[in-house]
Amino acid sequence: MPVESLFPRLEALLPRVQKPIQYVGGELNSTVKSWDEATVRWALMYPDAYEVGLPNQGVQILYEILNEMPETLAERTYAVWPDLEALMRAEGVPQFTVDAHRPVRAFDVFGISFSTELGYTNMLTALDLAGIPLDAADRGEDDPIVLAGGHAAFNPEPIAAFIDAAVLGDGEQVAIAITEVIREWKAEGSPGGRDELLMRLTESGGVYVPRFYDVDYHPDGRIQRVAPNRSGVPWRVHKHTVMDLDEWPYPKKPLVPLAETVHERFSVEIFRGCTRGCRFCQAGMITRPVRERSITTIGDMVEAGIKASGFNEVGLLSLSSADHSEIGEVAKGLADRYEGTNTSLSLPSTRVDAFNIDLANEFSRNGRRSGLTFAPEGGSERMRKVINKMVTEEDLIRTVTTAYSQGWRQVKLYFMCGLPTEEDVDVLGIADLARKVIKAGREATGSRDVRCTVSIGGFVPKPHTPFQWAAQASHEVVDHRLKALKDALRGDKEYGRAIGLRYHDGKPSIVEGLLSRGDRRVGEVIRAVWQDGGRFDGWSEHFSYQRWMDAAAKAGVDVDWYTTREREENEVLPWDHLDAGLDREWLWQDWQDAVNDVEVEDCRWSPCYDCGVCPTMGTEIQIGPTGKKLLPLTVV
Ligand code: SF4
Image 1 (cartoon, rainbow, N blue to C red):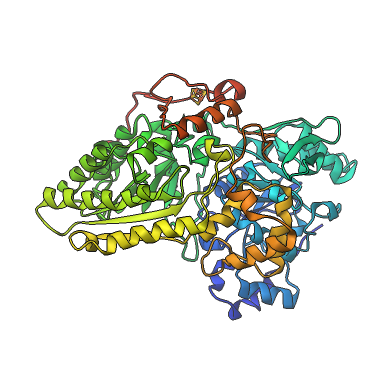
Image 2: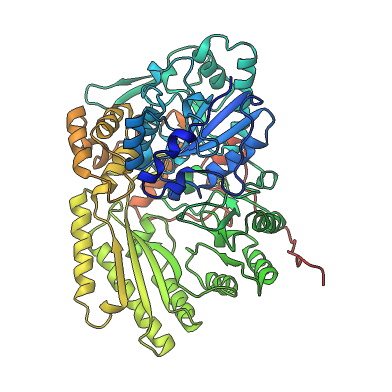
């Protein structure tokens, strides 16, 4: 059955909304395929505005892989701003894709990628606008399968009522597998309806269907157990891991945005996973083991991506890019290739050592020397041991001295506030460190023209990390410490004016904490917030702490119990039946080590410390060196 484009109806609304260009589609490298020739159709959503959602790598990769499959199509949809939402409701225009402006409800799968839990209310808006029942239990045969992915899907329990299924881990191979299961089921005449389809997806492995599990609670509110409620459903669902990144060199044709977006560059992921073991970092824990892309594939991807898109900036992405075993060769090879062109290269710098400055020097050959970024994360030596961020004050001062003496004038430092075992003195240590950084810079340059910007994020304990058992600091504690830090810097006549301070208050972190470690009961809070007008919770101008607290009170959910309460070792956690590959005993031991200021090494360079990922997932660390070099693009 042909599906008509909604564009004529949407077009009439566009003159009345802000930034209408974001809704029109037709970007370079976007794809529109014949609806009737496809047998499986995906609508992919990043649940934020176009300007944030379009650059998302996960969505771009799946969009391309699915569209390369015969008889399969994928289109994109993003969260519409409240002005367009109001008009769509008034005029009865449903949630649409930006590619061919088809109604999202007409697709077989509505896949939503959550990098953060603060996108949950935007998912509800999209479902409601699409005409898809909010509750999975109310959906019928004509509704798509609503599928959650991304890092937040490692604990999808707070949205269990709203999704049909969730997928953990890398999406490339599992998206293809899901497509084939759906294709086969449809070719057979859709036997058993959506219930059978969900069962087939469960049995195919690696798709979590919340409705196939029951949760029992103790009288005090803790979870007693999570158990399958029908046969054939596994007790635990495992994450997916792509083992050879060179086989998946996506995106090959990066999307070029029509409207302004947060990143306007071509990003190449140079490795996946991280074994540094920073205890606060969920991404580092759930994406293990490390798998590097080879230097030649990186070079080929950069070349092809620039050719296909015309971007003049290339970012080398990963959780800690300077740790690629051949990053020196990658940096020099790319800098040589693109020297004298208008292509600039960037590397998110977080490693605190002089080598990082060599890399930054290579990458700034064609560009401006704006600033160097380091992430000590903890303000005191003790705090950095607790979080396993092995950076000494000496390392930091030595590194920034080198940076300032090589002509860099601006250094950015990232920290967190509210970390486990933190005291006021640890946060005040950030001021001391920043002063020492400026002092070192002035000595190295003989000038007062050096600056340091300190950015502070609120710490949120995350599932599948050693801090999953930790008590989150209350927003009052975080705000008190940040104020003390601000006062300390403001009162400093010698160094204060050279130090910039950026931070947010502690309240949004509490809501993120509630959603990160929440269970199925938290779903009613999300629903109530959305019903009360909650949208775009990741944006400070739209976020309302009071709305979340009112909704929690209405739903009978005690926010402190979910956030500031420390968990016992044996408490069943809402995500224990979802397997990120990490051994629970190892995580607990690492939590105990944290409390005792004991550090662990990076298993890339030191012996395996049995976190569990490699043996349980049948995976292994894959690092170079390959010894290969990047050749010039044109043979001289
Ligand atoms: S199992 Fe061992 S080698 Fe593999 S990621 Fe964990 S600690 Fe590292």
